[in-house]
Image (cartoon, rainbow, N blue to C red; front, side, top):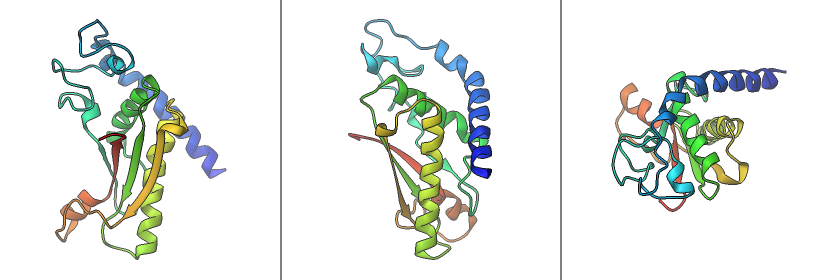
Length: 171
C-alpha cells in the first residue's frame, strides 16, 4: 500500500512539475538550421547556437547529477525538474538511452551502500518512466561508495558523493 501511495505521489508531483516547467519548451526552436533536424532537434530550449542540448551549458540537460540527503533515496524537489527534463528528452528521442549510476558516501557497510546506491538510481529511473521515458532507454546500476566525487572527510564532501549520475549512451 505504501508503494502504491508513493507512486501516486510521484505522478501527482510530476504533473505539477510539468506545469511549472512548461515555459522552457516555449523557447524550443525546431526550425531547419537551428542545431539540426529530426529527433535530435526536438530537445528542450537551448541558449546557445550550434550546441547540442546535452552539452549546452545553458540547458538544464547539461546538468547530470541528482543529490540526496543522508541515508535517503528520495529525489528532492529541487531536482524534479532536472529529472523530468531528461525524461522528456528521452521521450522525444527514442534512440537515446541513459545509464543511471547510484552513489553513496563512504559511511555504512559495502553491502548497505550498494543497496542504497541502487535505490537511488531506481528512484530516478522510476520518475523518468512515469514521465514517459521507456524502460529500454534506461539502465540503473549502483556504484555504492566506489566512485566518490570528493575524497575529503566531513559533510561537504559526503554530500557531493550522495548522488545519481545521468550518463547518456555514447558519451
